[in-house]
Length: 144
Image 1 (tube, rainbow, N blue to C red):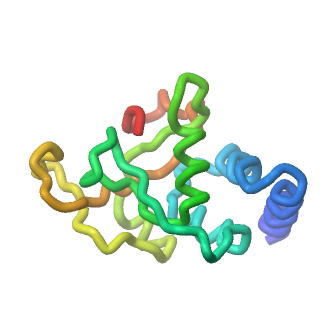
Image 2 (cartoon, rainbow, N blue to C red; image 1 turned 30 degrees about the vertical axis):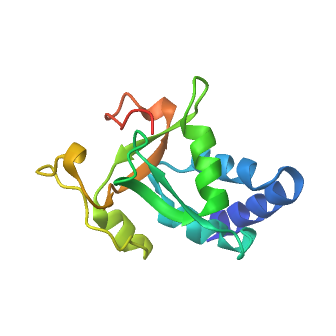
């Protein structure tokens, strides 16, 4: 329990001193297999409630949705998971991860039988966010 209190105190300090982006990076550096739901819950109090919702999709295909949520979170995750110097990447996960975190998207889940090129409606690809140092452990999705 003490570790959780220390973590929350450190996150609050980082948000105050360096901003939400640095606090999210700190969180992702200390935890592996982090879901978007977990980030939404952990950082909810630091997001402006007037912030518009956005989606992050795979390969620019609007029908391959990784997450739809708080705009500022989507912007930060996009910054740190793309480009040459990225530190984090997406890895496909089970829906149970999001069920355990208490938030799932109200979209059909992309299955192995689905052809991403012929989708006519948005489908959800549940992913977790991992640090690039863990990439050798299991394969992740390439650039989002």
